[in-house]
Image 1 (tube, rainbow, N blue to C red):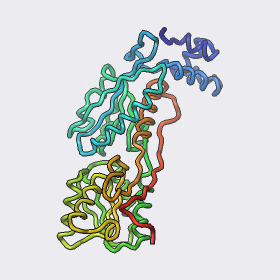
Image 2 (image 1 turned 135 degrees about the vertical axis):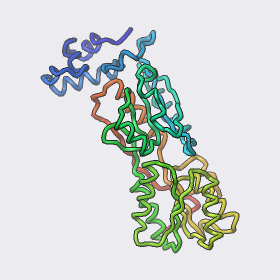
Image 3 (image 1 turned 60 degrees about the vertical axis):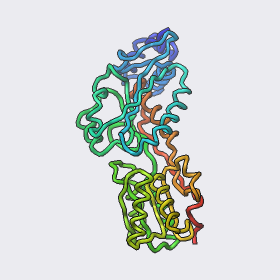
Image 4 (image 1 turned 90 degrees about the vertical axis):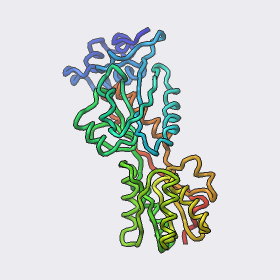
Length: 336
């Protein structure tokens, strides 16, 4: 049985006119109490009713469930290794739904970024999208040309769109402070050359904590090979690091391999810190110290926000920030 305004009105104990005014954001809705407005919206969300204009593009299954077609948009670059964790988080959320069916699409973005995703501007193709790892150019474009469907940004903040974020800057500062407290003489940051607000904030946190200290920055791609090559070149040039701070676990793993091949003991002669807590980080030799990025939980929240944007665009929760934690394993020493 399809969910109708009559169903919502009956469940919320209000008239059909009242439910219609509130859910369709009509001017007359301002005369109702906050309690009534909240009760109607919560009832519509719990029953899977779709009040906004995208309703005409949604389908009702034979059981009466609302069916949403949602997408994850992902750039084609080395960060693609995170997509599995994001899909796991999304699956955990969709599995918790009882009256809503999610049809999930994964679409990759080429070098044109968002400008190449025409589906965002055709509401007949899908009902919303999670935009993962958006670049500066992507953000500028969606503010200049707003999509026709709801979007949620993953790992990028926005004054306009809902987003999921984490304490990249604050935690990066703590990582760098560990190396300062252990009195390292030659600290090297392995940064990334990718366009990403999250990566930029990590680097900004490292640099702020190291202000007034001697350190080097080497930019590389989001790969093990790049981390290996960067450290190998440093050693060959005589700039043997005593501390390596990496913006991701992939470059940290490559750095570990380069140090091992050149007989530099970790952590006795060089401490190494990664970022993201990828599954392989617990199986390197030594086990990689890193920052835990709760990708699955962040993806769960991103999909939850996207569904809310479809079912209740007036929902007040528009973003969520996750606090990150450092994990010390075998590549770092206790504080001196």
